[in-house]
Amino acid sequence: MNKIVSRPVICLVFIIACGLAQPPRACLAAEQPSANKKSAEGPARFENEIAAFEAYDHKNAPPHDPILFVGSSTIRIWQSADAFPGLPILNRGFGGSTTDDVNHFADRIVFKYKPTLIVFYCGDNDLAGGRTPERVFNDIQTFISSVHEHLPKTPIIFLAIKPSIARWKLWPQMQDVNTRIRDLIKKDEKLTYIDTAQPLLGADGQPQKDLFRDDGLHMNDKGYAAWNQLVAPRLAERQTPSR
Image (tube, rainbow, N blue to C red; front, top):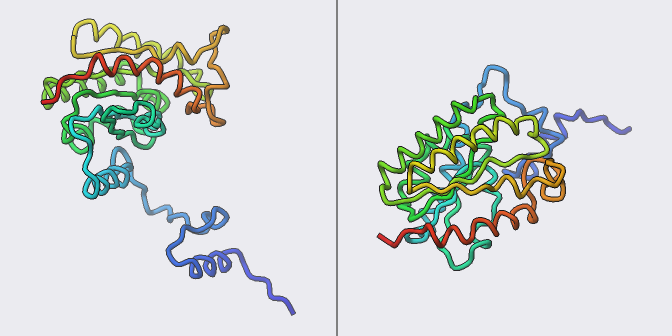
């Protein structure tokens, strides 16, 4: 006679058989932490990703005098080294980070590399998380001040917060932050602003669907190709001499 085995037992057998392999999605519900266990909050939720960068650096020397791409998953997904061959590109985009997260980890993912140029993208996660344009802009100013303090010769390129299908309702707030950044750079010769938002909009003023992944948030290869064309010439003109 066949025995009926409950789902938790099936999951347990699978996990034992696979050793340390990650359990299948069907079993995740049985393994959720109890309500008494709180997941990491704030910047601490990215500690594993930052530690992974450090572990990689321990085994692989980062490029000398790099051009550092830093920010949220828009940076992380970007195949930046392939997009700009011949340049010492270092990508330190992580998770669904906010500007505040980048500021928190700046010692570990920015300053220690002594980049000759920083390409920064962040902000839409900040707004999606409920932060106001004023708060986002203030956090960006904090980043600028920190870079000027630790790396006084290093210029920063700011990429406009991008419109997207998934977050279209936030576009007015994104434009607010973009305008503030664009006005700020007029007062600081070490800052450059690139309007990476406009190329993603069609003739109807809406985000072009063929430039985005299925999630409607992140760009696909075609979207990044449009950005590459805008960014490439600015890397050459803004990179400072090796120190």
